Length: 199
Image (cartoon, rainbow, N blue to C red; front, side):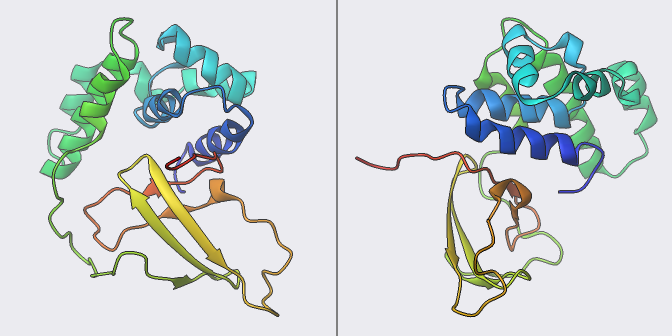
């Protein structure tokens, strides 16, 4: 992950493992709110409660002091009016997410409809055809593959060959993002939260 919130998002992903009682959808909604630069003080109460369990008071203060969050949506729109259409679409979606996560009557589904574009994504520039379930060499010395089921569940498979420098090292899913071959598709943040599949 890269960006001004990379360490905070990593913290939420990692700390979510210790809170199996908190629904994954609530954690996802919190991450979307953070990425949209919503002010912590404006969030719905349930999101404030979750954020307080995953982040320190200093982290939460930082979420309140983001310079972009001090601007109105109209000021943001005017600032980025000359940006390419795809960036304008992102800024518009972020503004809509900020408004939604602060609305006490809004649901997870309301945020999800803004954050997730439905349908098949067209092939983006620099895309590569990658067969589903393909193994890849990881720089740390093991083989890894990601088998996503939508954006909310990913089966992560790891193979550590004998004698590899990865033998005996702990794998921390919170440090990994599954990157699709199609650059128009979403990258998938990983966490170590266990999910039982099937019966």
